[in-house]
Amino acid sequence: MDDPEDGFFGESVAARYDDFSAAMFAPEAVEPAVDLLAELAGEGRALELGVGTGRLALPLARRGVPVHGIDLSRAMVERLRAKPGGADVEVTIGDFATAKAPGTFTVAYLVYNTINNLTTQDAQVDCFRNAAAHLAPGGCFVVEVGVPDLRRLPPGQTVVPFHVGDGSWAYDVYDVATQAMSSNYVDVAGDRGRFRSIPFRYVWPAELDLMARLAGMRLRERWESWTREPFTGESTRHVSVWEKP
Ligand SMILES: C[S@@+](CC[C@H](N)C(=O)[O-])C[C@H]1O[C@@H](n2cnc3c(N)ncnc32)[C@H](O)[C@@H]1O
Image (cartoon, rainbow, N blue to C red; front, side, top):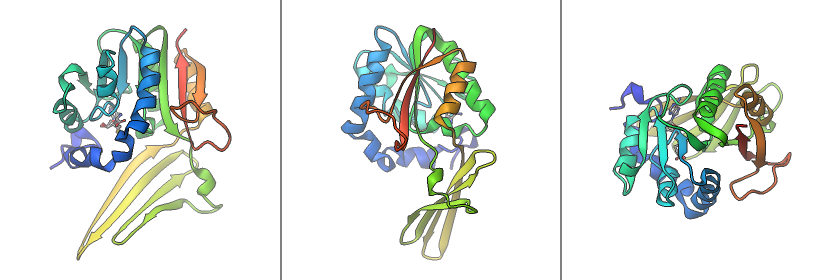
């Protein structure tokens, strides 16, 4: 049974998270991210907002970088704790838009589209302010997130299907007025069905730059991916780095 305090990453999701996200746990996905984060951390500490089951926090800690995580979900953090080295990553349970971790950091990071889990612009701005408040001067905040996929939305339509399978269907619903969206999953097995809807707020790169400025930071780099290819009009996601003066 999922504990509502764990948000959308309760026990039932935590139990399957690493398997469902297997491609994101592959060395080719993890290593370039850990390389960049270790470089930005330097001799300092790293703060992961939405640390989850430790996909990046654990390999970063193995590189010798002290890592602290913040996460709402005890179920996800229990999975992190159960892994080798899990006890080395300190975790604060709370909302990463507002929760405080002790000490200062040379890098804070929020990856895998998790900024979109904050469903209002105010909460996303608070998150930038919270990240900046944890950084030492010269420290960096890194966000990895998709570019809003509105090119797939024909005029007059608000729904984009992204999976049509045998007994399972999934679609995104967009509200272009508020930037609210949801990802929706329908699964049918025999005569039983299940519907899940997860709310998000999509956010543009330039809007993130303004949020960073509100938090007193400036854009230092924007790449298409962790392997640092240039960000272009055709990029579908970005890895952005803002610096606190
Ligand atoms: C997609 S998972 C990413 C986990 C990990 N960063 C990774 O890359 O595998 C999102 C994580 O963020 C957490 N999360 C979502 N919204 C949150 C919030 N407002 N405050 C704290 N944690 C949150 C979830 O519980 C979950 O563990």
